Image 1 (cartoon, rainbow, N blue to C red):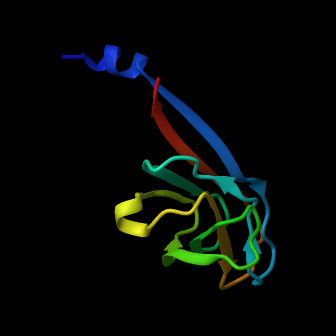
Image 2: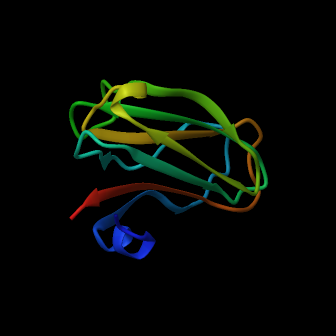
Amino acid sequence: MLDAIGWASKMSVSYQHLFLGYEIRDTVTHESGVGEWPHLQAVTVYIENGHDQDLTITIRGNKEKTTMGSVELVSAFTVSAGTSTSYTLTPETTGWLPYIYVTATAGTAPTKGEINVTIITIEKE
């Protein structure tokens, strides 16, 4: 049996930034960059809303590395101003597509702050 240190040494963590220091100052829908979900394992989408307004987030997927023709993997949810949240996707709960991205929309235009969205994957070495 592996202890916590042994387990961690057998895993590789990777990060992909979809939004990094992105400032929203209007109420239109903003699309992040497209990231990869390369394996049929879980992936966590970590969202940090540093804006002074709530954001509505959707997580979308596609068969190609583009936002055109994508489908919604997770229904819209709110990330309150100044908070962070995460959402873990698994093929069993959301289905699997090789490319994912998020959309972010503010109901009221933020006057300060930024959003960071990171995809986190862990793979066995």
